[in-house]
Length: 241
Ligand SMILES: Nc1ncnc2c1ncn2[C@@H]1O[C@H](COP(=O)(O)OP(=O)(O)OP(=O)(O)O)[C@@H](O)[C@H]1O
Ligand SMILES: [Mg+2]
Image (cartoon, rainbow, N blue to C red):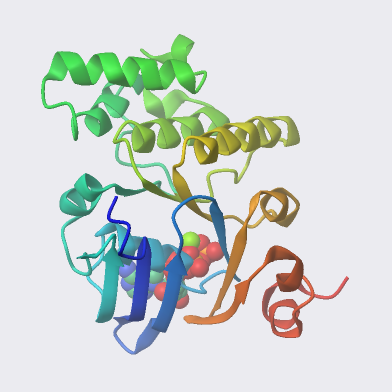
């Protein structure tokens, strides 16, 4: 990586939908390595931020630099090729594909030969414990396996920065614990993670850094232990015990 440039640097990022300011001039720095938690109430703009960073949506204003490359408004395949990939909150596009085919789509990014892409997808599926489901149609997987498939599809692109949008939603405590171990393994492999999640008990122990969004603005940026004691964060999101 380019040692001189910040890893992810977002400046003045806004996204308007008609008169609604889903993101209102946010500034965000994500260092290389570790896990940043992006939290906030429903409708705060978390998914919109991921959409803008990953190239799924063109921002209305602002700059997004990844390792020195301006990626605001760049198409998602260019952003993915640079190493920034997201998962989807609602698993949709690959519903009719088998697990192996869905993950192969991700693997094709860096393995243009289909045979190599399939082999790499197979390894990724195994590593995520989905090996026995490789020929299952995605639509018929359990929620936990659909989430795992989302992760496998993203990992098959060999990301440097992984944006995880509620990959633990709907999981049982046991499944959550397995997912936490998996994420710790990714961080150990130096994949930087930004994670949107509503389950604070799971997220806070994992996070090195916390960013709180509320109505399109960042209201907190700092350490997890400070976030849980911050009056503005408590008012906007966490609530009082
Ligand atoms: N494509 C769109 N067109 C119009 N409005 C949108 C669009 N996408 C998001 N919004 C609106 O933008 C705001 C932010 O939505 P967003 O999905 O980013 O919130 P979120 O923080 O991810 O919420 P949640 O926790 O419920 O997933 C909401 O008011 C939402 O209704
Ligand atoms: Mg969302």
